Length: 566
Image (cartoon, rainbow, N blue to C red; front, top):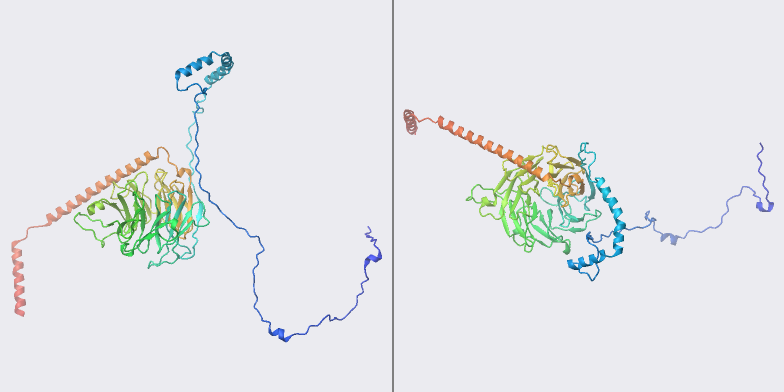
Protein backbone atom coordinates (compact mmCIF):
# COMPACT_ATOMS: atom_id res chain seq x y z
CA UNK A 1 0.00 0.00 0.00
CA UNK A 2 1.50 3.35 -1.04
CA UNK A 3 1.09 6.33 1.29
CA UNK A 4 1.08 9.57 -0.66
CA UNK A 5 0.01 13.05 0.45
CA UNK A 6 -0.12 15.61 -2.36
CA UNK A 7 0.05 19.36 -1.59
CA UNK A 8 -1.42 21.82 -4.06
CA UNK A 9 -0.20 25.30 -3.13
CA UNK A 10 1.22 28.22 -5.07
CA UNK A 11 4.89 28.98 -4.78
CA UNK A 12 4.19 32.58 -3.78
CA UNK A 13 2.44 31.44 -0.63
CA UNK A 14 5.39 29.39 0.60
CA UNK A 15 7.23 32.48 1.91
CA UNK A 16 10.91 33.23 1.62
CA UNK A 17 13.34 30.41 1.24
CA UNK A 18 15.23 29.81 4.53
CA UNK A 19 19.01 30.08 4.23
CA UNK A 20 20.99 28.53 7.10
CA UNK A 21 24.51 29.77 7.81
CA UNK A 22 26.84 30.51 10.74
CA UNK A 23 26.81 34.15 11.91
CA UNK A 24 28.32 35.86 14.95
CA UNK A 25 26.39 37.89 17.63
CA UNK A 26 25.20 41.38 16.70
CA UNK A 27 25.16 44.18 19.30
CA UNK A 28 21.85 46.02 19.18
CA UNK A 29 22.46 48.65 21.88
CA UNK A 30 24.88 49.40 24.75
CA UNK A 31 23.90 51.39 27.87
CA UNK A 32 26.88 52.40 30.06
CA UNK A 33 26.48 52.23 33.90
CA UNK A 34 25.72 55.39 35.88
CA UNK A 35 27.59 55.50 39.24
CA UNK A 36 25.28 58.27 40.56
CA UNK A 37 22.19 56.17 39.97
CA UNK A 38 23.90 53.13 41.49
CA UNK A 39 24.47 54.97 44.79
CA UNK A 40 20.72 55.58 45.08
CA UNK A 41 19.91 51.85 44.81
CA UNK A 42 19.26 50.06 48.14
CA UNK A 43 19.36 46.29 48.35
CA UNK A 44 16.15 44.82 49.90
CA UNK A 45 15.48 41.42 51.36
CA UNK A 46 12.93 39.29 49.55
CA UNK A 47 9.40 40.47 50.36
CA UNK A 48 6.46 38.03 50.26
CA UNK A 49 3.09 39.59 49.54
CA UNK A 50 0.08 37.23 49.66
CA UNK A 51 -2.63 37.80 47.11
CA UNK A 52 -6.10 36.33 47.36
CA UNK A 53 -7.71 35.69 44.02
CA UNK A 54 -10.68 33.73 45.40
CA UNK A 55 -14.13 35.31 45.69
CA UNK A 56 -15.06 36.88 49.02
CA UNK A 57 -18.10 35.46 50.78
CA UNK A 58 -19.86 36.35 54.02
CA UNK A 59 -22.44 34.62 56.23
CA UNK A 60 -25.31 36.25 58.07
CA UNK A 61 -27.77 34.61 60.45
CA UNK A 62 -31.06 36.03 61.65
CA UNK A 63 -33.07 34.56 64.49
CA UNK A 64 -36.65 35.71 64.07
CA UNK A 65 -39.12 36.07 66.89
CA UNK A 66 -40.98 32.92 67.83
CA UNK A 67 -44.59 32.79 66.71
CA UNK A 68 -47.12 30.85 68.74
CA UNK A 69 -49.98 29.14 66.90
CA UNK A 70 -53.20 27.69 68.22
CA UNK A 71 -55.65 25.34 66.55
CA UNK A 72 -59.35 25.99 67.16
CA UNK A 73 -62.50 24.47 65.74
CA UNK A 74 -66.26 24.80 65.87
CA UNK A 75 -68.97 22.17 66.32
CA UNK A 76 -71.83 22.75 63.88
CA UNK A 77 -74.64 20.79 65.55
CA UNK A 78 -77.75 22.26 63.93
CA UNK A 79 -78.58 23.76 60.54
CA UNK A 80 -79.05 27.42 59.81
CA UNK A 81 -82.26 29.30 60.53
CA UNK A 82 -83.71 32.38 58.83
CA UNK A 83 -82.98 35.74 60.40
CA UNK A 84 -86.59 36.32 61.44
CA UNK A 85 -86.70 33.07 63.49
CA UNK A 86 -85.45 33.22 67.07
CA UNK A 87 -83.42 30.07 67.65
CA UNK A 88 -83.79 30.34 71.43
CA UNK A 89 -87.62 30.33 71.20
CA UNK A 90 -88.91 26.72 71.01
CA UNK A 91 -92.36 27.76 69.81
CA UNK A 92 -90.95 29.82 66.92
CA UNK A 93 -88.68 27.00 65.77
CA UNK A 94 -91.46 24.41 66.04
CA UNK A 95 -93.82 26.69 64.04
CA UNK A 96 -91.22 27.13 61.29
CA UNK A 97 -90.46 23.38 61.26
CA UNK A 98 -94.18 22.51 60.74
CA UNK A 99 -94.35 25.03 57.93
CA UNK A 100 -91.42 23.40 56.11
CA UNK A 101 -92.74 19.87 56.63
CA UNK A 102 -96.02 20.80 54.86
CA UNK A 103 -94.12 21.89 51.74
CA UNK A 104 -94.34 19.42 48.81
CA UNK A 105 -90.66 19.88 47.89
CA UNK A 106 -89.65 18.75 51.38
CA UNK A 107 -91.70 15.55 51.04
CA UNK A 108 -90.19 14.72 47.61
CA UNK A 109 -86.61 15.37 48.94
CA UNK A 110 -87.17 13.14 51.98
CA UNK A 111 -88.59 10.32 49.83
CA UNK A 112 -85.69 10.50 47.39
CA UNK A 113 -83.06 10.38 50.16
CA UNK A 114 -84.64 7.57 52.19
CA UNK A 115 -83.50 4.61 49.94
CA UNK A 116 -79.85 5.59 50.19
CA UNK A 117 -80.13 6.07 53.94
CA UNK A 118 -81.79 2.66 54.32
CA UNK A 119 -78.93 1.06 52.39
CA UNK A 120 -76.25 2.54 54.64
CA UNK A 121 -78.16 1.69 57.82
CA UNK A 122 -78.56 -1.95 56.77
CA UNK A 123 -74.89 -2.08 55.74
CA UNK A 124 -73.83 -0.71 59.13
CA UNK A 125 -75.96 -3.32 60.89
CA UNK A 126 -74.41 -6.13 58.84
CA UNK A 127 -70.75 -5.12 59.40
CA UNK A 128 -69.26 -4.55 62.85
CA UNK A 129 -66.58 -1.96 62.21
CA UNK A 130 -65.38 -2.13 65.83
CA UNK A 131 -64.73 -5.85 65.83
CA UNK A 132 -61.22 -6.89 66.91
CA UNK A 133 -59.75 -9.44 64.52
CA UNK A 134 -56.92 -11.93 65.18
CA UNK A 135 -57.68 -12.11 68.88
CA UNK A 136 -56.29 -15.63 69.01
CA UNK A 137 -52.74 -14.34 68.41
CA UNK A 138 -50.62 -13.44 71.44
CA UNK A 139 -49.91 -9.74 71.85
CA UNK A 140 -46.31 -8.78 71.26
CA UNK A 141 -44.72 -6.24 73.63
CA UNK A 142 -43.67 -3.00 71.95
CA UNK A 143 -40.00 -2.75 71.11
CA UNK A 144 -38.30 0.04 73.05
CA UNK A 145 -35.26 1.61 71.51
CA UNK A 146 -32.99 3.43 73.97
CA UNK A 147 -30.56 5.80 72.31
CA UNK A 148 -28.72 9.03 72.99
CA UNK A 149 -27.23 11.21 70.29
CA UNK A 150 -25.17 14.38 70.36
CA UNK A 151 -27.02 17.11 68.49
CA UNK A 152 -24.59 20.00 69.04
CA UNK A 153 -21.24 20.94 70.59
CA UNK A 154 -20.65 24.40 72.06
CA UNK A 155 -16.91 24.99 72.17
CA UNK A 156 -15.24 27.51 74.42
CA UNK A 157 -14.14 30.50 72.27
CA UNK A 158 -11.21 31.02 74.66
CA UNK A 159 -10.06 27.39 74.55
CA UNK A 160 -6.32 26.98 74.92
CA UNK A 161 -6.00 29.72 77.50
CA UNK A 162 -5.47 27.39 80.46
CA UNK A 163 -6.86 24.44 82.30
CA UNK A 164 -3.85 22.19 81.78
CA UNK A 165 -5.24 20.20 78.85
CA UNK A 166 -5.83 23.08 76.48
CA UNK A 167 -9.24 24.29 77.72
CA UNK A 168 -11.06 25.77 80.68
CA UNK A 169 -13.06 23.17 82.62
CA UNK A 170 -16.79 23.84 82.84
CA UNK A 171 -17.75 24.70 86.41
CA UNK A 172 -21.49 25.33 85.98
CA UNK A 173 -24.31 24.94 83.44
CA UNK A 174 -27.76 26.52 83.93
CA UNK A 175 -30.74 26.75 81.56
CA UNK A 176 -32.61 30.02 81.11
CA UNK A 177 -36.26 30.09 82.27
CA UNK A 178 -37.60 30.12 78.71
CA UNK A 179 -35.48 27.11 77.74
CA UNK A 180 -34.05 28.83 74.66
CA UNK A 181 -30.47 29.06 75.96
CA UNK A 182 -28.14 28.29 78.81
CA UNK A 183 -25.36 29.97 80.78
CA UNK A 184 -21.93 28.37 81.17
CA UNK A 185 -19.20 29.26 83.67
CA UNK A 186 -15.58 28.16 83.31
CA UNK A 187 -12.95 27.80 86.05
CA UNK A 188 -9.22 27.11 85.66
CA UNK A 189 -7.27 27.68 88.89
CA UNK A 190 -4.03 26.50 90.44
CA UNK A 191 -3.48 25.27 94.00
CA UNK A 192 -3.40 28.86 95.29
CA UNK A 193 -6.79 29.70 93.64
CA UNK A 194 -5.02 31.96 91.13
CA UNK A 195 -6.67 31.97 87.68
CA UNK A 196 -4.76 30.29 84.87
CA UNK A 197 -7.09 31.36 82.06
CA UNK A 198 -9.50 34.17 81.14
CA UNK A 199 -12.47 34.58 83.47
CA UNK A 200 -15.21 35.20 80.89
CA UNK A 201 -18.48 33.27 81.11
CA UNK A 202 -20.95 32.95 78.23
CA UNK A 203 -24.66 32.74 77.59
CA UNK A 204 -25.34 30.45 74.61
CA UNK A 205 -28.35 30.20 72.34
CA UNK A 206 -29.35 26.55 72.10
CA UNK A 207 -29.96 26.86 68.35
CA UNK A 208 -26.62 28.53 67.52
CA UNK A 209 -23.29 26.95 68.43
CA UNK A 210 -21.15 29.22 66.26
CA UNK A 211 -20.68 31.97 68.84
CA UNK A 212 -22.06 32.87 72.28
CA UNK A 213 -25.10 35.10 72.52
CA UNK A 214 -23.54 37.19 75.30
CA UNK A 215 -20.36 37.43 77.36
CA UNK A 216 -20.20 37.91 81.14
CA UNK A 217 -17.01 39.25 82.75
CA UNK A 218 -16.75 38.40 86.47
CA UNK A 219 -14.18 40.13 88.72
CA UNK A 220 -12.80 36.74 89.85
CA UNK A 221 -13.01 33.10 88.84
CA UNK A 222 -16.68 32.15 88.51
CA UNK A 223 -17.42 28.78 90.15
CA UNK A 224 -21.21 28.69 89.91
CA UNK A 225 -23.72 30.55 87.74
CA UNK A 226 -27.50 30.32 88.02
CA UNK A 227 -30.36 31.96 86.09
CA UNK A 228 -33.28 33.58 87.82
CA UNK A 229 -36.44 31.43 87.50
CA UNK A 230 -38.58 34.53 86.86
CA UNK A 231 -36.43 36.90 84.79
CA UNK A 232 -34.49 35.64 81.77
CA UNK A 233 -32.07 38.57 81.97
CA UNK A 234 -30.97 38.15 85.61
CA UNK A 235 -28.17 35.82 86.75
CA UNK A 236 -26.31 35.22 90.02
CA UNK A 237 -22.92 33.65 90.54
CA UNK A 238 -20.41 32.65 93.20
CA UNK A 239 -16.76 33.73 92.91
CA UNK A 240 -13.51 32.20 94.07
CA UNK A 241 -12.89 35.31 96.18
CA UNK A 242 -15.85 34.44 98.42
CA UNK A 243 -18.09 37.13 96.94
CA UNK A 244 -21.38 36.76 95.12
CA UNK A 245 -22.22 38.81 92.03
CA UNK A 246 -25.33 39.42 89.95
CA UNK A 247 -25.69 40.27 86.27
CA UNK A 248 -28.39 41.95 84.23
CA UNK A 249 -27.91 41.01 80.59
CA UNK A 250 -29.51 44.26 79.48
CA UNK A 251 -26.72 46.27 81.14
CA UNK A 252 -23.80 44.52 79.44
CA UNK A 253 -21.03 42.11 80.42
CA UNK A 254 -20.00 43.75 83.70
CA UNK A 255 -21.78 42.62 86.89
CA UNK A 256 -24.65 44.80 88.06
CA UNK A 257 -23.65 44.31 91.69
CA UNK A 258 -21.35 42.35 93.99
CA UNK A 259 -21.13 41.76 97.71
CA UNK A 260 -18.36 43.61 99.61
CA UNK A 261 -15.38 41.51 100.77
CA UNK A 262 -16.10 42.02 104.48
CA UNK A 263 -19.63 40.56 104.09
CA UNK A 264 -18.65 37.72 101.75
CA UNK A 265 -17.62 34.16 102.54
CA UNK A 266 -14.24 33.52 104.08
CA UNK A 267 -13.39 31.08 101.30
CA UNK A 268 -14.61 30.44 97.76
CA UNK A 269 -18.30 30.00 96.94
CA UNK A 270 -19.19 26.48 95.81
CA UNK A 271 -22.87 26.92 95.02
CA UNK A 272 -25.57 29.52 94.44
CA UNK A 273 -29.32 28.84 94.19
CA UNK A 274 -32.36 31.09 93.87
CA UNK A 275 -35.08 30.72 96.50
CA UNK A 276 -38.83 31.04 96.17
CA UNK A 277 -39.67 34.67 97.02
CA UNK A 278 -42.21 37.27 95.98
CA UNK A 279 -39.62 39.47 94.29
CA UNK A 280 -37.78 36.60 92.62
CA UNK A 281 -34.44 38.24 93.43
CA UNK A 282 -33.37 36.36 96.55
CA UNK A 283 -30.79 33.58 96.56
CA UNK A 284 -28.45 31.82 98.97
CA UNK A 285 -24.86 30.63 98.72
CA UNK A 286 -22.51 28.20 100.46
CA UNK A 287 -18.83 27.37 100.54
CA UNK A 288 -16.05 25.50 102.33
CA UNK A 289 -16.21 27.96 105.25
CA UNK A 290 -19.33 26.09 106.42
CA UNK A 291 -21.76 29.01 106.28
CA UNK A 292 -24.89 29.45 104.15
CA UNK A 293 -25.84 33.05 103.47
CA UNK A 294 -29.05 34.46 102.01
CA UNK A 295 -28.85 37.54 99.77
CA UNK A 296 -31.19 40.07 98.18
CA UNK A 297 -30.13 41.45 94.79
CA UNK A 298 -31.50 44.85 95.63
CA UNK A 299 -29.02 45.24 98.50
CA UNK A 300 -25.84 43.14 98.47
CA UNK A 301 -24.08 45.16 101.17
CA UNK A 302 -24.89 42.47 103.76
CA UNK A 303 -26.62 39.08 103.76
CA UNK A 304 -30.23 39.00 104.94
CA UNK A 305 -29.63 35.80 106.91
CA UNK A 306 -26.93 33.22 107.51
CA UNK A 307 -26.66 29.75 109.03
CA UNK A 308 -23.62 27.82 110.25
CA UNK A 309 -23.59 24.20 109.06
CA UNK A 310 -22.58 22.70 112.41
CA UNK A 311 -24.64 19.72 113.50
CA UNK A 312 -25.10 19.74 117.28
CA UNK A 313 -26.75 17.08 119.41
CA UNK A 314 -28.35 19.34 122.00
CA UNK A 315 -30.41 22.50 121.85
CA UNK A 316 -28.21 24.07 124.53
CA UNK A 317 -24.99 23.51 122.56
CA UNK A 318 -23.87 26.53 120.55
CA UNK A 319 -22.80 26.28 116.93
CA UNK A 320 -19.22 27.15 116.06
CA UNK A 321 -17.49 28.10 112.83
CA UNK A 322 -14.48 26.03 113.90
CA UNK A 323 -16.57 22.83 113.75
CA UNK A 324 -18.58 23.86 110.66
CA UNK A 325 -18.80 21.41 107.77
CA UNK A 326 -17.55 22.69 104.42
CA UNK A 327 -20.33 22.94 101.84
CA UNK A 328 -19.63 21.35 98.45
CA UNK A 329 -23.11 21.45 96.83
CA UNK A 330 -26.52 23.00 97.52
CA UNK A 331 -30.07 21.76 96.88
CA UNK A 332 -33.34 23.68 97.04
CA UNK A 333 -36.88 22.74 96.06
CA UNK A 334 -39.20 25.73 95.34
CA UNK A 335 -42.28 23.81 96.50
CA UNK A 336 -40.71 23.54 100.00
CA UNK A 337 -39.68 27.18 100.48
CA UNK A 338 -38.28 26.96 104.03
CA UNK A 339 -36.22 23.78 103.66
CA UNK A 340 -32.95 23.14 101.89
CA UNK A 341 -30.15 20.57 101.80
CA UNK A 342 -26.37 20.83 101.61
CA UNK A 343 -23.72 18.29 100.67
CA UNK A 344 -20.50 18.58 102.63
CA UNK A 345 -16.86 17.91 101.86
CA UNK A 346 -16.65 15.00 104.31
CA UNK A 347 -19.49 13.03 102.66
CA UNK A 348 -22.46 14.12 104.79
CA UNK A 349 -25.81 15.41 103.56
CA UNK A 350 -27.40 17.82 106.02
CA UNK A 351 -31.03 18.92 105.83
CA UNK A 352 -31.78 22.48 106.93
CA UNK A 353 -34.84 24.45 107.97
CA UNK A 354 -34.56 28.20 107.64
CA UNK A 355 -37.45 28.83 110.05
CA UNK A 356 -35.89 26.83 112.89
CA UNK A 357 -35.37 28.56 116.22
CA UNK A 358 -32.82 26.31 117.91
CA UNK A 359 -29.69 24.72 116.36
CA UNK A 360 -31.33 21.28 116.33
CA UNK A 361 -34.39 22.69 114.54
CA UNK A 362 -32.25 24.51 111.97
CA UNK A 363 -30.34 21.31 111.03
CA UNK A 364 -32.74 18.47 111.87
CA UNK A 365 -31.48 15.74 109.53
CA UNK A 366 -28.08 14.23 108.75
CA UNK A 367 -27.22 11.44 106.28
CA UNK A 368 -23.87 9.67 105.94
CA UNK A 369 -23.78 9.51 102.14
CA UNK A 370 -20.20 9.02 100.89
CA UNK A 371 -16.60 8.67 101.97
CA UNK A 372 -15.53 11.81 100.05
CA UNK A 373 -17.06 15.12 98.99
CA UNK A 374 -20.65 15.09 97.76
CA UNK A 375 -20.50 16.26 94.14
CA UNK A 376 -24.23 16.27 93.25
CA UNK A 377 -27.40 16.53 95.29
CA UNK A 378 -30.90 16.72 93.78
CA UNK A 379 -34.42 15.81 94.85
CA UNK A 380 -36.69 13.73 92.66
CA UNK A 381 -39.17 16.17 91.03
CA UNK A 382 -42.13 13.84 91.70
CA UNK A 383 -41.03 12.12 94.95
CA UNK A 384 -39.71 14.96 97.08
CA UNK A 385 -38.79 12.69 100.00
CA UNK A 386 -36.22 10.92 97.82
CA UNK A 387 -33.01 12.51 96.60
CA UNK A 388 -29.88 11.35 94.82
CA UNK A 389 -26.27 11.96 95.79
CA UNK A 390 -23.02 11.50 93.88
CA UNK A 391 -19.70 10.85 95.54
CA UNK A 392 -16.61 8.63 95.35
CA UNK A 393 -17.55 6.03 92.70
CA UNK A 394 -21.28 5.53 93.31
CA UNK A 395 -24.70 7.10 92.83
CA UNK A 396 -27.09 6.69 95.74
CA UNK A 397 -30.79 7.39 96.32
CA UNK A 398 -31.85 8.31 99.85
CA UNK A 399 -35.19 8.67 101.57
CA UNK A 400 -35.86 11.15 104.37
CA UNK A 401 -37.50 8.35 106.34
CA UNK A 402 -34.28 6.30 106.46
CA UNK A 403 -31.24 8.12 107.80
CA UNK A 404 -28.90 5.20 108.40
CA UNK A 405 -28.23 4.25 104.76
CA UNK A 406 -29.43 4.69 101.20
CA UNK A 407 -32.45 2.83 99.85
CA UNK A 408 -30.91 2.36 96.39
CA UNK A 409 -27.35 2.63 95.15
CA UNK A 410 -25.30 1.74 92.11
CA UNK A 411 -22.37 -0.67 92.15
CA UNK A 412 -18.94 1.00 92.41
CA UNK A 413 -17.89 2.14 88.96
CA UNK A 414 -14.44 1.71 87.44
CA UNK A 415 -14.32 5.44 86.68
CA UNK A 416 -15.19 8.23 89.09
CA UNK A 417 -18.77 9.50 88.92
CA UNK A 418 -18.72 13.30 88.63
CA UNK A 419 -22.38 14.43 88.44
CA UNK A 420 -25.95 13.17 88.11
CA UNK A 421 -29.44 14.63 87.58
CA UNK A 422 -33.04 13.41 87.56
CA UNK A 423 -35.14 13.51 84.41
CA UNK A 424 -37.97 16.06 84.82
CA UNK A 425 -40.40 14.02 82.69
CA UNK A 426 -39.55 10.34 83.25
CA UNK A 427 -39.85 9.70 86.98
CA UNK A 428 -37.52 6.71 87.25
CA UNK A 429 -34.66 7.98 85.03
CA UNK A 430 -31.45 9.61 86.19
CA UNK A 431 -28.40 10.53 84.11
CA UNK A 432 -24.88 10.13 85.53
CA UNK A 433 -21.57 11.40 84.17
CA UNK A 434 -18.20 9.69 84.55
CA UNK A 435 -14.61 10.84 84.39
CA UNK A 436 -13.96 8.84 81.20
CA UNK A 437 -16.50 10.86 79.19
CA UNK A 438 -19.40 8.41 79.45
CA UNK A 439 -23.06 9.25 79.99
CA UNK A 440 -25.01 6.53 81.82
CA UNK A 441 -28.82 6.45 81.89
CA UNK A 442 -30.13 4.58 84.95
CA UNK A 443 -33.80 3.54 84.92
CA UNK A 444 -34.82 2.32 88.38
CA UNK A 445 -37.82 0.42 86.99
CA UNK A 446 -35.87 -1.58 84.40
CA UNK A 447 -32.74 -2.65 86.25
CA UNK A 448 -30.78 -1.36 89.21
CA UNK A 449 -27.50 -3.27 88.94
CA UNK A 450 -26.44 -1.65 85.66
CA UNK A 451 -27.48 1.35 83.55
CA UNK A 452 -30.10 0.96 80.86
CA UNK A 453 -27.80 2.76 78.42
CA UNK A 454 -24.17 3.95 78.53
CA UNK A 455 -22.75 6.12 75.75
CA UNK A 456 -19.29 7.60 75.24
CA UNK A 457 -19.99 11.29 74.64
CA UNK A 458 -16.47 12.77 74.70
CA UNK A 459 -12.83 11.88 75.17
CA UNK A 460 -12.29 14.37 78.01
CA UNK A 461 -14.00 13.98 81.42
CA UNK A 462 -17.60 15.15 81.80
CA UNK A 463 -18.06 17.35 84.88
CA UNK A 464 -21.49 19.05 84.88
CA UNK A 465 -24.97 18.12 83.63
CA UNK A 466 -28.23 20.05 83.51
CA UNK A 467 -31.50 18.66 82.17
CA UNK A 468 -33.90 20.71 80.07
CA UNK A 469 -37.43 21.10 81.41
CA UNK A 470 -38.75 19.24 78.37
CA UNK A 471 -36.79 16.11 79.37
CA UNK A 472 -35.39 15.40 75.89
CA UNK A 473 -32.20 17.51 76.06
CA UNK A 474 -29.29 17.50 78.49
CA UNK A 475 -26.32 19.90 78.52
CA UNK A 476 -23.09 18.18 79.59
CA UNK A 477 -19.99 20.26 80.39
CA UNK A 478 -16.54 18.72 79.94
CA UNK A 479 -13.08 19.31 81.31
CA UNK A 480 -11.91 20.82 78.00
CA UNK A 481 -14.48 23.61 78.05
CA UNK A 482 -16.96 22.02 75.63
CA UNK A 483 -20.69 21.68 76.27
CA UNK A 484 -22.27 18.66 74.57
CA UNK A 485 -25.99 18.87 73.89
CA UNK A 486 -27.38 15.32 73.91
CA UNK A 487 -30.88 14.27 72.94
CA UNK A 488 -32.63 11.28 74.50
CA UNK A 489 -34.91 8.87 72.71
CA UNK A 490 -38.65 9.03 73.35
CA UNK A 491 -38.49 5.83 75.42
CA UNK A 492 -36.22 7.70 77.87
CA UNK A 493 -38.33 10.86 77.91
CA UNK A 494 -41.96 9.81 78.37
CA UNK A 495 -43.38 8.01 81.39
CA UNK A 496 -45.96 5.27 81.11
CA UNK A 497 -49.26 5.49 82.93
CA UNK A 498 -48.15 2.91 85.51
CA UNK A 499 -44.64 4.24 86.13
CA UNK A 500 -45.58 6.41 89.09
CA UNK A 501 -47.37 3.59 90.90
CA UNK A 502 -44.54 1.14 90.17
CA UNK A 503 -41.83 3.54 91.33
CA UNK A 504 -43.82 4.31 94.48
CA UNK A 505 -43.98 0.60 95.24
CA UNK A 506 -40.23 0.19 94.65
CA UNK A 507 -39.27 3.11 96.88
CA UNK A 508 -41.66 2.07 99.66
CA UNK A 509 -40.40 -1.51 99.51
CA UNK A 510 -36.76 -0.47 99.77
CA UNK A 511 -37.53 2.07 102.51
CA UNK A 512 -39.38 -0.59 104.51
CA UNK A 513 -36.45 -2.98 104.13
CA UNK A 514 -33.99 -0.34 105.34
CA UNK A 515 -36.18 0.50 108.34
CA UNK A 516 -36.30 -3.18 109.31
CA UNK A 517 -32.53 -3.44 109.02
CA UNK A 518 -32.07 -0.27 111.09
CA UNK A 519 -34.32 -1.62 113.85
CA UNK A 520 -32.42 -4.92 113.87
CA UNK A 521 -29.07 -3.12 114.02
CA UNK A 522 -30.24 -0.98 116.97
CA UNK A 523 -31.44 -4.08 118.77
CA UNK A 524 -28.09 -5.82 118.32
CA UNK A 525 -26.19 -2.76 119.52
CA UNK A 526 -28.42 -2.55 122.63
CA UNK A 527 -27.87 -6.23 123.45
CA UNK A 528 -24.13 -5.86 123.00
CA UNK A 529 -24.05 -2.84 125.31
CA UNK A 530 -26.07 -4.64 127.96
CA UNK A 531 -23.77 -7.66 127.73
CA UNK A 532 -20.70 -5.47 128.17
CA UNK A 533 -22.21 -3.71 131.18
CA UNK A 534 -23.19 -7.04 132.76
CA UNK A 535 -19.71 -8.53 132.32
CA UNK A 536 -18.10 -5.44 133.80
CA UNK A 537 -20.41 -5.57 136.83
CA UNK A 538 -19.73 -9.29 137.35
CA UNK A 539 -15.97 -8.82 137.18
CA UNK A 540 -15.99 -6.25 139.99
CA UNK A 541 -15.39 -7.93 143.44
CA UNK A 542 -15.55 -6.28 146.86
CA UNK A 543 -12.08 -5.19 147.97
CA UNK A 544 -10.26 -7.27 150.66
CA UNK A 545 -9.71 -5.29 153.90
CA UNK A 546 -6.55 -7.18 154.79
CA UNK A 547 -5.01 -6.56 151.38
CA UNK A 548 -5.72 -2.88 151.75
CA UNK A 549 -4.07 -2.77 155.14
CA UNK A 550 -0.96 -4.58 153.84
CA UNK A 551 -0.70 -2.16 150.90
CA UNK A 552 -1.01 0.85 153.23
CA UNK A 553 1.67 -0.52 155.56
CA UNK A 554 4.02 -1.21 152.67
CA UNK A 555 3.53 2.30 151.34
CA UNK A 556 4.20 3.85 154.80
CA UNK A 557 7.41 1.82 155.20
CA UNK A 558 8.62 2.91 151.79
CA UNK A 559 8.00 6.56 152.67
CA UNK A 560 9.92 6.22 155.96
CA UNK A 561 12.94 4.70 154.21
CA UNK A 562 13.07 7.53 151.69
CA UNK A 563 12.85 10.12 154.50
CA UNK A 564 15.67 8.38 156.40
CA UNK A 565 17.86 8.40 153.31
CA UNK A 566 17.50 12.19 153.10
